[in-house]
Length: 392
Image (cartoon, rainbow, N blue to C red; front, side, top):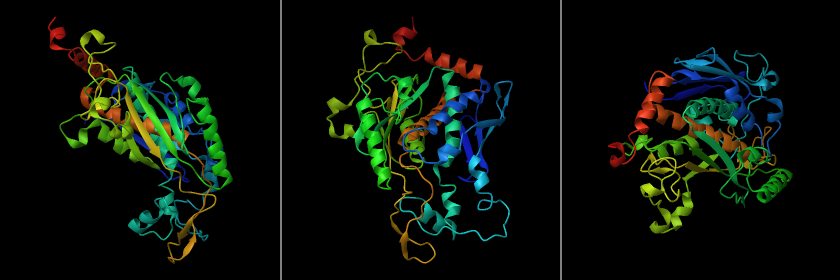
């Protein structure tokens, strides 16, 4: 089968996270160090809680790589949960003699209620352990593998914070990505960054949480990934589904996104430039308001994805809620939590976009080895210009 897919298993306070990745070609360089940087980036950001002081995530490759190169077989990875030592009774695999206190106070905005009803649980811990954002560590590790594949062809990924708690960034056109990673909220606008951290502090003081918006930018993607033919192969549709599968993500836009809905067509569309104005690759556009995707396919311009992240639902000052067992009014359950996850959310969004693009890449240029994929890719690029150029 041509494509890139992954599976994860594991609970928030279980022994760890297991990841299986299928579809990698043989011969791709891959090491644990290639994955480590993004796992570290995911754990950073102003407003994170105590869990990040406990965990130091490391993805151990346990199968699928030999002597630094992929084998073409499934890749297996393992991320240990260091907090497991504090949960060996509550999260034991085998039955335990001790009475374990059940969680029955439901949190508004979380998977608690529909998950418990769907699976017939009388203990919400069975839901919240898997519905936790802890699972995103496995996604980021998988995204690191996808990025390593795409990096062989010059594709690069970045993300930054556009807003937190209504404070908006004005980052300008040229972002210093290395400097950005040193900013506490991963914001390219220093003035907005300071106001964002202030908003996080205010929410923490009030026992509350805040959300925001992040943007992912991808460069080096050629024209023609995805498809206009079938609804489930449209590139923007696949990216939107992947983004909305991440905990707390509630909205996706491309390029100008929702802002484009207020514009006229003459202001919204990306004019295609004539050949004498091309730079770098054929079929350039004067603008990139559609975020590098038209008709479900990449245009060759940078892919720009904007994502809305809601405030997380675990509040230090809990909202009124209902007890799962009695139906009576109670305060929602509280467990150690973050105040703001927006800076880290950009890293997770990068990972999911990378996973989608890796799948689309293998769909278009697939082969059993990295060299075969490279030949297919180069052959395709040789034929994407105007007919007049190809016939010379």
